[in-house]
Length: 160
Ligand SMILES: [Fe+2]
Image 1: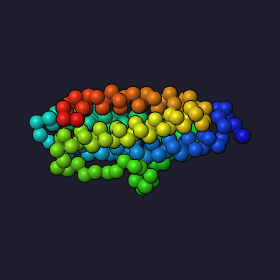
Image 2: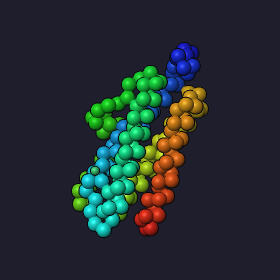
Image 3: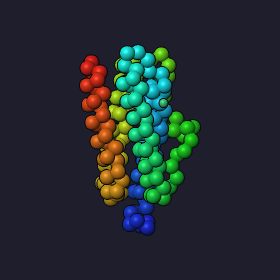
Image 4: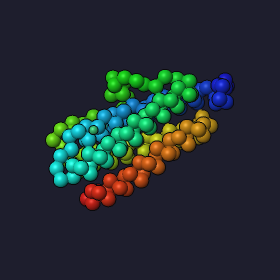
């Protein structure tokens, strides 16, 4: 089997890169959803949530850039159009205008759950199939952030 310039086997890495691209697409849909929440949140929690959503979409933006650059590091191009994101993402867009603050937090928690699920699969794929600890290490950081933030969002919304 052919080995690329960073010592990874070509075939499993190509499959892994496609998998990272799917994670990237899901993240982009999530990112825009959180921006919508930031813009459209209303009510007594406005100041808290307006700032929290901004923190979360800024974090998502940094994560997306790292995923895209990992795809490039592994030798392929990241998806870069919303047409592709919408086509491959299992996270779906929602309208945030008029959505209650609690529903926004629930939507973010649902997205986190899906992203964590995909990330666990990518980590497994990276370590077990591609021998790519670098990708696993990058994604574990993203996973831990969402695990901790999920706890905080659930604590905010005590019904969760
Ligand atoms: Fe803003």
